[in-house]
Image 1 (cartoon, protein in one colour):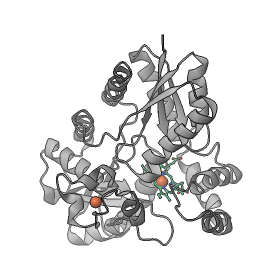
Image 2 (cartoon, rainbow, N blue to C red):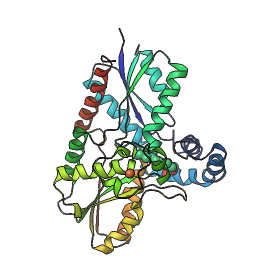
Image 3 (cartoon, rainbow, N blue to C red):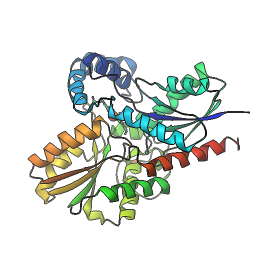
Image 4 (cartoon, protein in one colour):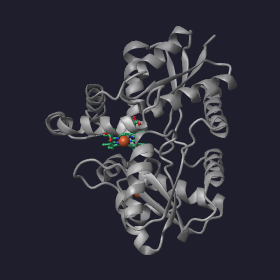
Length: 342
Ligand SMILES: C=CC1=C(C)c2cc3[nH]c(cc4nc(cc5[nH]c(cc1n2)c(C)c5CCC(=O)O)C(CCC(=O)O)=C4C)c(C)c3C=C
Ligand SMILES: [Fe+2]
Ligand SMILES: [Fe+2]
């Protein structure tokens, strides 16, 4: 009789805020060809020859500002999610990180040691991207084939369009929205435009109005569409008019063109357009992390206030909210049941 288990995957953080640990983490992250998709030699020249000379020290300083006694917020929150989910399901639950520790391999091994032979794996990313969902699945498959060939893995697909997730996100935002705000900004992690062209099997997305349309075959791999669609569904549930809502993309790296508009530019320009009281949410992240707690809540806030903004209200991620754990439970149970159908 097969034994089932659940593996939750998040991005991962450095082991500590020491520059050397941040460097090791950034090396693994940025040398992933699904993240910096250049040929190995050019990627190595860029990452090891340029980025890793200066970025680790800067990033280490940034990590210090968000680090807690228990460690990186992203890891701490993922562990809390695991604990809460474990109380709701009767199969073992483990976590794994795409980069650094506990790795995906550690997660699979922990399940294997409990006798699990069928794993439901949930990448904790609502929207598909080559640099998130795809790299997680590729890595997990590589490890499974090499080290655990007797184990089956069912991968949970991106869930940005699922009603249960949208209801959960909308309710979470509704509870935290300030009474008065001029606009609600949805800031998603960005990706280079090239990634979207590359993963579009239809080769029809032109990074234009097509991404806003309701249904197109290109959408199952268009991160830009999936972010707009998440926003549209959430604001419908919240009953917010479109003119009170802005979408932008944060955290770009390097000189390539990333999907626009950029969050930093948006934050600098909207006060001049009369938006002085801002609410901001980051739905590409299910758990708060460096990119929300430092880049948005500290740096982003500073940009907005310096440009004449008055109130900046950051709305935290779903983190370990009970309603979100229920969503995770349902997504996993759907797939646990799928094993019976194979
Ligand atoms: C939520 C989805 C994410 C996408 C898409 C994504 C793409 C992406 N990221 C980088 C470069 C960096 N990202 C960094 C941090 C970071 N990124 C995500 C998520 C996505 N990235 C998270 C959750 C985090 C925070 C990790 C944490 O420990 O809290 C960093 C490291 C931090 C820094 O030095 O600023 C880099 C670098 C690229 C290039 C990319 C798409 C190609
Ligand atoms: Fe990132
Ligand atoms: Fe698109």
